[in-house]
Image (cartoon, rainbow, N blue to C red; front, side, top):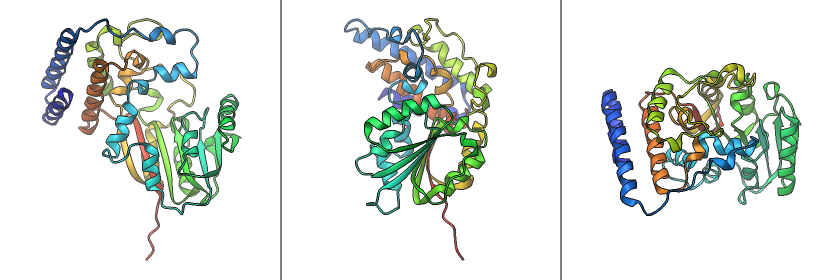
Length: 342
């Protein structure tokens, strides 16, 4: 495929530090895209879908406009992480678990929110969970989560609590999940230590989270590359929920964020590695997050849009692997650290 050949070239330009060559390759990609569109010209392009997201912004619309909502970015990242060895995350988690199956397990979610992203892991047909403990600081989120899990038949013990102060029992849980919540925790090292303590030997800790600069303040290099790519995107991809066309990649003002937004995000990777054995990990989105956040909903399922997303994903991978940009997100699986006797 064309995008694979171009990504190989991008990698070579990065290894040589050839920024002008890199940008020439990007421009050539866009020329190819425009030519391809004229040749295909089978009919009208896919209708714009941003109108569906106007109006009152709720959790669903926030998810749809988030950068990860574009195409199969999350799946592609997972496939990179496991070298395409597993069809889905739960298959990898199941393979990682080294505890006896048969007896019902106990699970834990920290920063559970509405449980939309987590509950399926605890209702997997190959796993039997007797109950799940779930912690969150928001009573409203817990009520939404309770409705979801009650309908699914999953027994969940909800705790309205500040996770920063959590004290967990030792050797208790077969699966612990922190999904898009670790970056809201200030006492990152304490929580990572508690997670390690609470894992059963052979159990699994899974997190998918923001690990970039604090308070979502993109680094200079992240902003530089994202701005270059934004300028190359056609207008139809740069439309925001309010209808305005994005012209600049801008850091969010810390004054507009919640007090705990990305408060200690840059400590997460080191804290997890300090207290647990990291088995699988993919660190990414140094380009994708600042570029696509808030405009991802413009990408449709058309071949043209998916080819473009695949190119951006692979460019992001090449930039992060080469150290040109720092990753903003991680997908990490870890286990309880084994003590060495002797």
